[in-house]
Length: 68
Image (cartoon, rainbow, N blue to C red; front, side, top):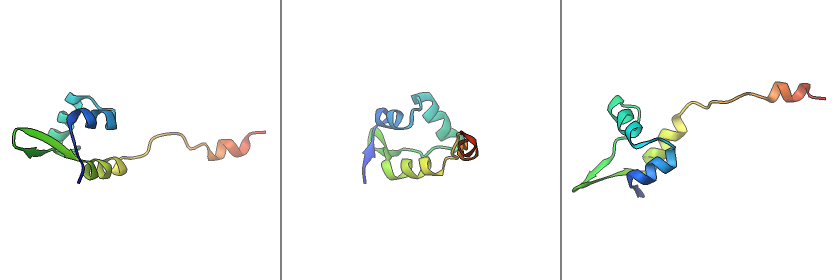
């Protein structure tokens, strides 16, 4: 089990500290593990969260087939 600090979580997700904690309170982000006086996130839980996100972007398959 790999445990990540908040700074690692923000770098890995591109989310800011406030956004991470807001999403936790909304139930849309994995909560941290409480370890004594610190908190850490399980890297596997973050990976599962990321993999469950909807994919955004353009579907260029049709546009590419029309290119000359």
